[in-house]
Image (tube, helix red, strand yellow):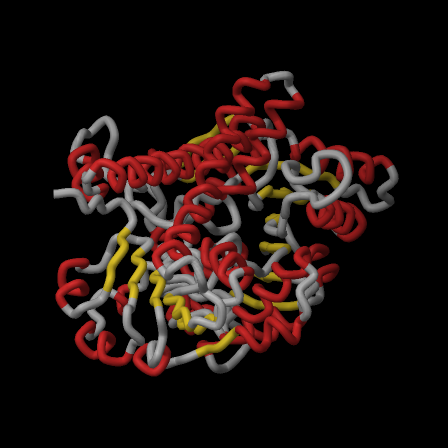
Amino acid sequence: KICCIGAGYVGGPTMSVIADKCPNLEIKVVDINQKKINAWNSKDLKFLPVFEPGLEDIIKRVRDKNLFFSTDIDFAIKEADIIFISVNTPIKTSGIGAGEASDLKWVEASARRIASCAKGHTIVVEKSTLPVRTAEVIKNILYSSVNNSPDNSSFSVLSNPEFLAEGTAIKDLENPDRVLIGGDDSSSIEKLKEIYLNWVPTEKILTANLWSSELSKLTANAFLAQRVSSINSISAICEATGGNVREVADAVGLDHRVGKLFLSPGPGFGGSCFKKDILNLVYLCKQFNLPEVANYWKQVIILNDWQKKRIYKNIVKSLFGNLSDKKIVILGFAFKANTNDTRESPAIQISLDLLDENANLVFHDPKVSQEQIKEVIISAQKDKKKDESFINKKLFFAKDIYKAVEDSDALILITDWEEYVNLNWQKISKLMRKPSWVFDTRAILNSQNIRNEGINMWQVGEGNFE
């Protein structure tokens, strides 16, 4: 029997795939959030709290058979042989390490709950993205409880980081590049390995010590984020010199030593992990007196933030330095296509900057709801102390893109949803106010076709020098 604490973007899809591949296992995903659990149990699968291609089909097959969603955390812990900790680990907002270190309160709370409820021998698995040596915290809490336990409970702690990309999480789970298990208890490692062997080839299952396993996750995300910032830095050089970043990326990506993945220019990386993991790495380096290494990784985030500001400044400059009451259409609010996750989405900061210019914003996203967008913007605006009534007057939403662009001054493509690629630009040109602008922050549109319709065009990484 397996228990997963945390029903979010990692816990829900991961346990769904394990349940699908291992019908002999009984899996309970538990969370304190009743609303989230209700969504996972919804009869209408459109209301699942996580959108991932392929997830609905799996939920249909396994839910209420060997996969269950519940808020009865204590009972699930008591029954479980293996417990995955898959809770949120946001960056601390105050105190020591604020702005860099992870807030581990939910991890600690989970460990204490496990310590008080678990029976017999329990394998506890870190699944959340965690700073190096978090397992030490979990071990201290669990092992301390053993000394006071009247029922002979005992624990093993393993690290089993997820290497999922949102939008392809199900594919990544069903056909992983690797499965990494870190720990010092060979018997527990073998038990977890047995689960994955139901569908993962043995050569793809790696073992390591706990600290290497935790650090591997941070390093993988740091390297990927670094590539995004690197290609975005080249996009700025291309615009200044007349190059084209897509052509540069294609040429560089054909070098087998570099590879083509994560060389797509854009408005900056988002999601729950990249920024958080790099900040954790920065904090770790400072703690171990490695300031040069800390500064190196910090620059990846500095450039990512600069890219968003650069795009915003280009928009303001192109629209005569004045956005007051102008209608700006934003295509896409999710941080990337094929997910409804908005955490750290570039659309948030760009929207906030445009609101500071007094623009009216119209949002369209295939999977992110109006309520979700509004909640994110209002929450992000709290630091600026803007009145909520002001925000409500400035935010608009449209399910029909062509309705959205009526009398608009500019259209900003932020998320690379496939449906944005083949829009009817002749129709859009007639609906927009002149002079009209399109800002393509993903370099996925045919800029010449758009210019042929009389629309001004800016595309990231496209130099316009002849």
